[in-house]
Length: 88
Image (cartoon, rainbow, N blue to C red):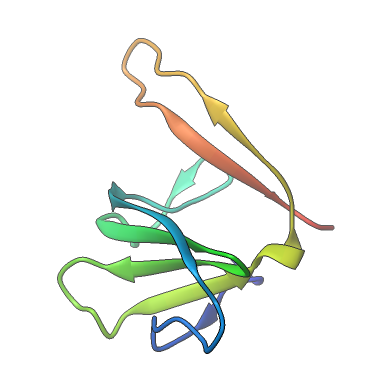
């Protein structure tokens, strides 16, 4: 979680929204944390997570801090996940 920083959640000038997804929960490794109902926005330069109830609760991480992103399929008792692997 040390790579996320608080933000206004607004896109910066000359940055473009690529896609967004509602109902996103953030994990720290396998651990569920309190950020469990939000919208994840992927822009051309960063990932932004915005709480669905409190829009002032927004965090961001620059894409330069992400090595790669992978999809994990749903399993018995587990939902599908998109996993972002941070730089070391």
